Image (cartoon, rainbow, N blue to C red):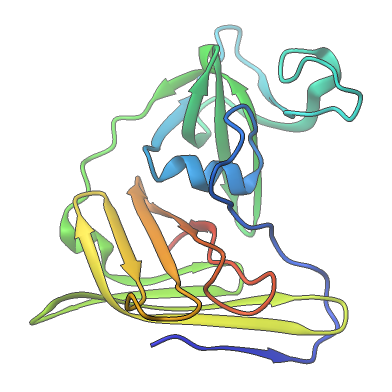
Length: 221
């Protein structure tokens, strides 16, 4: 069963949503989680010359050739042995996510500066538990009839807060899992999840709650 509501608040806007049919050469947060449902892997930063590896944007605002152009270089960077998640590789660049505490960065990193991590495969038991991203929560349990997922998400704007939720059977297939409302539900909510390292990358279809509510994110237990 799913529900959504609107309550009053006085906080800043929340994250963007993933949208079907993303342009392949973009690498925003929504793009990252969208691409991740087709495959995501953990990498360690290992630049040939050591030092810092800087994130690059996919648009510098002036129509320059991003991410290669110098004007696309961001202030955010990672260093040797930092772990990043990669959901797309294109022309020697990777659409990558890095997180530390409550802060995260998404952008293009040079593939040559990364080395794939030796991460043990996830078993079914690795799905279980309470997962969180910002104010969003997803709890996964297992009973006689298989896995179940329960999610709560909130978007907080300047004068209001919108919320959404889902609850029901979770179809788990190896490192990926899917939740979907009953076929006759209006609106129809679906949530895709993928496990990698100690993370769970989540993308929804944009119909799982009130305006701007999204379960998109990189969750941790």
